[in-house]
Image (tube, one colour):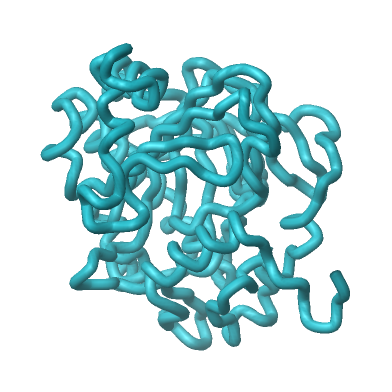
Length: 322
């Protein structure tokens, strides 16, 4: 959690995004039980929790279960997640292993192998129709719709003026942000952790997982998440935490990681981020009643610095020895 008293002075620095939660970022403690995540549904195009207390708990945790709406078809995305890394001689989606960042002229996109157990295929929405089958593109578009519903429902709980919502979210409030689909395979033969502890950089992540392995840090305890087959896992990211921390309804970004996987694990996720492309960057903002809306950094800078820190580590806070 970002220190509320320091937020107005917060600035993006290489290796220091997690300086205030350094101990969690470098925490090797094992899990301590199972997370009791709150549950929500979508009703009448709004995010609905059974009670205000349950909603407050979910927002404070920074993560919750969401019943998958009937208008979202996951069949082809599930198939893609299970096969994109296998090679075209094994499966029709296996050819995507050969589509790397050079194809998109963007180091973040395409097929990657990481320093942990993950190999992934990550693609920004402006390339979906060109690269993906229609069924996957359509699911991605419906996930944009879902993320917009969630984001608007959360902003209604804050004191951010509606007139500022578009700028504050880099267009996401009107489905004009930047969106990524990521498909992940955890390689059981690869030693080490599944995925290092981190917070996502965007406003929210929609995760589809039917496999155990996700661990979340709630109240300074690492807890395992037991996935529900008919639910997404929704978690908030740094952009949401920065935006809302000084509002009447702060939203926490959840620190999470994936444990070492001894069997093949497949997931896919949808990231909602402030609009940015090589020509335009909408920026990351924060709001307070005293200062109004103010920019804290560029969108792409936050994405790049967060990605680097996840895999290269966090500098210890000033005065703290390694």
